Length: 406
Image (cartoon, rainbow, N blue to C red; front, side):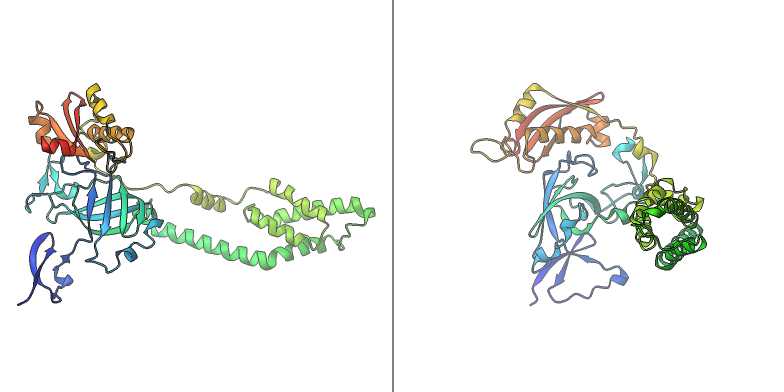
């Protein structure tokens, strides 16, 4: 009799043999296995931010399962070199597998839009994607902040965030791209040849055209002649090198070449060339401006995201609630309530303010439950609050364990 174990196939529970399953990715038979489960400061859906940027102090941990890798630590090698990570997870608390083509996102305050134009958790495949800050990696565990994931969420994958690839850049037409690359390649080739040969030849030619013998820096009798010769050489160099930018590295190389034909005093006068060099050609200037000018994104989003009809709320605490919050300690002390993820009273108050200012209520609760209290948990804190016109007020704070006993 074969031993049976559970696995997940596109978010649905199925049975499979322990023997290797024939799974065809080409036909869409995708079997998934969680790589770990989130330990989060949010224990339930109520009050959990809808986006990671809402509460920067929300923290959590992810321990890689040994069911995936014999040595989970090896899978995280090198990840500490990234500041943020993408996390793919399952919305395991949806309550049902059905979904609708149109949904009512809270920021639209009741208006409907297509599910694929939203971040709704109720999707054909209940897969979530979030960007979290990676605080540190210790062994087989990731320490995260700025998360919008609840306790026990199964994680499918982790990928490093790379701004070069993940941030949209200003689009460039193929013609402009080819022209720019050609100009850069031509410029690089020209500089290489000029540094290796042409610069030396142009200086030699300048000296020969003016019938200038090798200058002896110790010969004081030719001081006046040397002065005029230097000016002529500098002028010739100015014309020969006008096609290039007055880059400091190029000028240093010019100085090294000039040392073979002139006195040390002449080399020092090259600094004059650095200050008086004519501006680069228009084409080179445009290229330099393009390189120095920060790339702007050509991305955009729906107006209801940037200009939501749901305004941010002012948040206030009653004196009693603030006094209760101050009783929580950063580290566990006997008989005293303490934080698990947060580190101080200030952090806790700031995190609660961030959550409430974004109005965590559903559209239904916002429109039909105005006279009811709102509850949510953050770390080890159970918060009771109510909402008024344009504000949220924290009324009561209790330890989560104490509240559950009541």
